[in-house]
Image 1 (cartoon, rainbow, N blue to C red):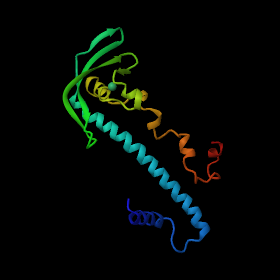
Image 2: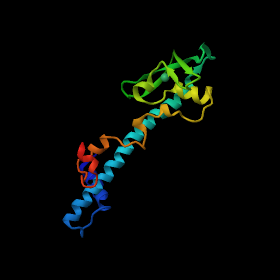
Image 3: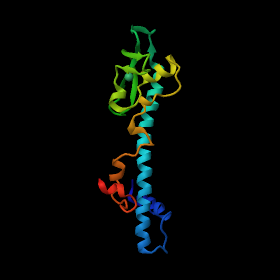
Image 4: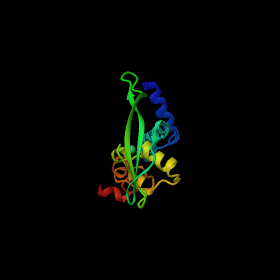
Length: 182
Ligand SMILES: [Zn+2]
């Protein structure tokens, strides 16, 4: 961002909080309050946009997947073989594109616990349901509610996280005594 644009952006941001009649002491207080508001908004936006894009990508790619008929492999386990196209990334544009190549993933669904294990391990690595699990629950099983087990703690808004209490260095300790212990 160019310096002039950044300065204008900072001015417009602080215009909501201070004006030429604001006294210095009030300014300091309002500055802290303004920074808190901004930090909170940025944190929300960062986590939402990153996770939202991942989920959106997985949803879009379900259309390239094909599920086999289910095979009963034990009393309460059913196996599906899913073929999918291989995606590659263009080195220059950094954009992914679909190829004609295919690979097969194994998905095992437990009919007692209603949970599934997928060979691609995307959920275990980043905490987001992969396209195979999305298609399994949505298409194959027709379940409309996402199981609690697939909503990991880091994506939940109703969980207060420790790092949100230490990241804001300009946070007024008197307002939040819990932050003093970190
Ligand atoms: Zn998977």
